[in-house]
Length: 127
Image 1: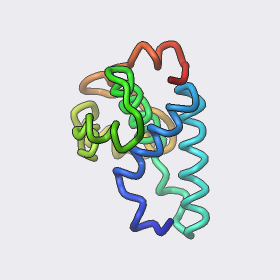
Image 2: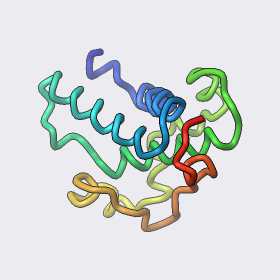
Image 3: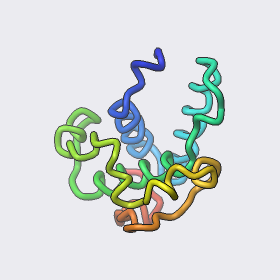
Image 4: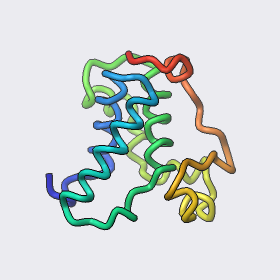
């Protein structure tokens, strides 16, 4: 996949797929690995990877998955269009914290509003 084709929606779809098949921590690990391989394959600097955004989006997708079942990633996105707003994490993080070097390198907890966690994520299980 070309970098330009890997949109925010594609990230959400991939998070859904990983969470459908794995528990939260495994989904995070798989997403991290996939993104890092994607960057390397496309000659994009590894510094583009953002650990906090990766984990936060998996947690957010998991939360919405716990609210209602879906039959596919397309169905999930249709039921949860708010997840297509790539700026939604700025309701949980200040820009200063989210775009800091620390947040890029390792997971940083939200400083504005916690990311809700579904019962499913709390159990660490797959759907």
